[in-house]
Length: 189
Length: 214
Image 1: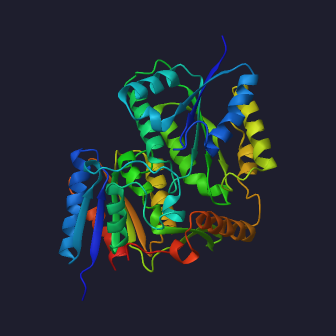
Image 2: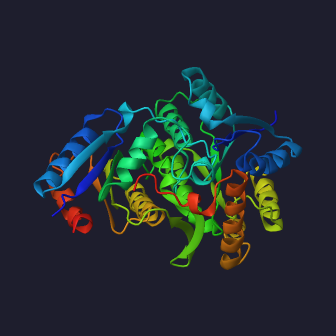
Image 3: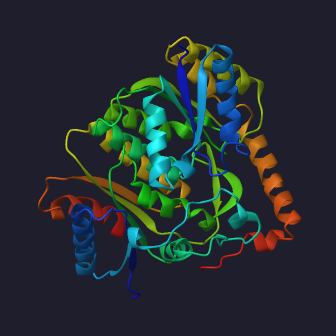
């Protein structure tokens, strides 16, 4: 049987919390027999999306910016699971991670179709990875946690993810394994 | 002394050539007519250097109102716009801002349903909460920048409320949040537009569906 591949995007700024979460998730996936590819976004060269749509209409499927953003997009779409690991930032991803996520739009087509009564883009590829959002957050921010879940859910629709799950790990948590183990079955089945 | 507003544009296309600028100017112009002074900052430039970030924080601190206008990027804000908010929140947290401005946002997207911007607006509201800025409401527009009478009227009504120092009323925001044309028509027209644009680039219909990473 083909080994399944997980692409973990570490969106931390160097704070040990997100690095620890990433390592923990990688360990759990490895124990399930998955191959794990960790991309530490802060160490990559990823320019912001220019909003030019060249990746849709001029160089279909490839961003015209020749930097690590292209490679991250390739690794994500070639994986079975993409995990976004990030400090919860106003309910969303860190800006470091968001620069990389914005550069994933070459993976879909510009064309529109209807999904669950809404207009969305048509998939470019036959298959896409499931999506797991793992946020690290200060406790006592229930709105931010709720928004984080919605962001991951909305991303899953727009990134064509067959399955998705999100969890928020409190910054004070010493052992995130329990939290991660509750959501992993939803995206690794 | 006149009241001050900061128009913070979050489109990579900047202060001149973007839909964000066009929408933002519709509000800013009305504020200026009402006697406000309006500064304009491009978020992407403001996060590029330490000096530009400091200038953004100082301008925000000197403003009574910050109006963020940005396109929806993968369900929230473009990366650099988000970075600008991180910097502004940090400045607020460390009391580098003598006063906190009020904050409102206008998020627009390339889908016909303005409500697809809801998550981005919620994120901005959460920023305001964390930064201690007074929330004056969020507007959502869809339709990929296609001009509509409803959008013009909504922006005018919102600007008038903001000029008075009021929040954007829920009924104004709700009116703006309804699609301006049937979905089937938007899909038909949108797909034809993308094919036309690709053809101009000498990209065939088949090549447009390329799978370089398959």
